[in-house]
Image 1: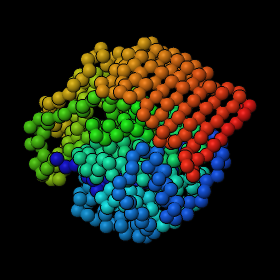
Image 2: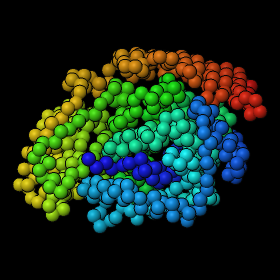
Image 3: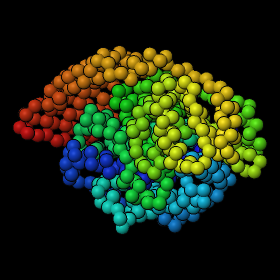
Image 4: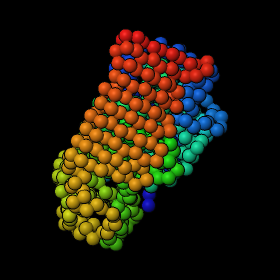
Length: 557
């Protein structure tokens, strides 16, 4: 089996997205902070890249993440020219040459990259133009560009729009260093290198954590009694799931849309996924994900209740021997997953996966690239869905996409109940039919929910009793707006009438409130703050301790 991403390749991808995440997601996050507290509510200290400033960022990341940094991290700076030399050396490694070759195969066969376009130069330019900073888990070092972290762009004013950019970047990357210390990110990336789907799932999880810590660092610097786990902030972050990437496309004109989305979407969707767990049970829940069961598919990232918390296992496929006979000169395999399918269906668009509601029923897929004697490549794509109606919806979307990209070329789409087989790249229609017959004989093994259970899961029932083994159980009335009560080991959340009464506690955070926040008390151990609010009378909060302690209060306002 040829894997598409290795640990080295994931590190290279992290280089590419280190600035992309700022240019798209941070616009949203900074706007969110400004919306809540008003621009200029606190002046930011100048960040000159000095040792004292960086040490402060490191300490802030340690506090926000709730884990100690056990080893010294080397802080290095490189000019853009030096970074380009480093990237060239990285891409010239044998394993990275193989990575680029296999990624080109995937993009070419799915018509996501023109056949005459080589990925290597495109990838190099993307890295050189967009890198701001990155953490290297292999060498245990944090590298930042020598100069402004955001490369000045005549068409972009991103760095002016986002106060605290440098703080966010460093706190974000120090979070990677902290988690690498405790959970060995290099090993985890290597283990998740089997296919595109697994790679993007792990990227989403690790980067989602770092996004939350980076945002908490910004809010801490503003001195406000709020974190990414506060109710309103958590709700607003949930909007990232529906955020399109048009701003990123403008910044990266000339880059294939699929590549833009594959680099940036894991940050957005990973932030929502990680905050879903952290909001309920604190950072301890994130630690348990690392030590007990990592998300192995992007379906678990996109649909945590339906997939990850339910203990989902993706379907496995066993190809018919007839398929293997077609691959006289080798076979490569991959898995697109729910996110990869969404990005393929987008074509030249940059829509969010939420645009394709049928993806919630994804149970697994496998792509086979069959190489023939004359170096021709036939593609067989097998997938399984929860129920036939969901598979039918996928077929309709896939046929539209194939019609756009394969006009005049033979292809075939066949649905058998909840299973779908798609083949293309054959010499003629008859060859497609023969290959399709083999594809339909392939075996698939999966634990699918029953038809009735699947349908009920999609109905807007007035009363639900959600139960997620090993995590939580609860009661929801009217979608949680009337009553939302759930708890698990070490945590409890209860809300009536959308916030008329609210209480929550977990190892990191305790809160009680009434009248939709007009009366409230909150304390957060990681962010180190305490907050009281009496309606129309007064509010008071403390943030920090010792020399860094800050107090704010307001009376009759």
